[in-house]
Image 1 (cartoon, rainbow, N blue to C red):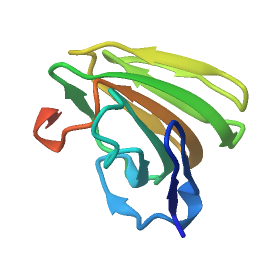
Image 2 (tube, helix red, strand yellow):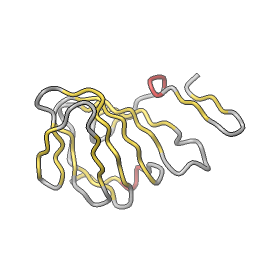
Image 3 (cartoon, rainbow, N blue to C red):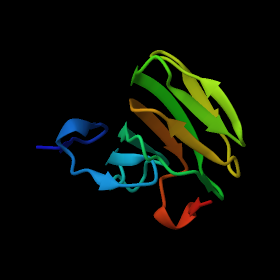
Length: 120
């Protein structure tokens, strides 16, 4: 079971959720169905073909779990090297993409909304 629900807590196995294609690669989005929780948590496999995009209102916090030695984030045109253990806060309006294959956790607030995502 991907999600268990109890009175005051929820548990999700992100690896059991279906993957959704996105500009970054494939995202598994947790807690989207929890109506009173204001955020989502994504386990995302970044592909080599990740595309530049931004969000109008969403803030994303990337936490790098796995990355190759040349992994980087492009943030408003600036390439910043990243490695496992690094976190990157991306505010609304920042054009961004991951460079190189990596696996990341992305905390999104407010809750992810596909209509807020704009490809550049």
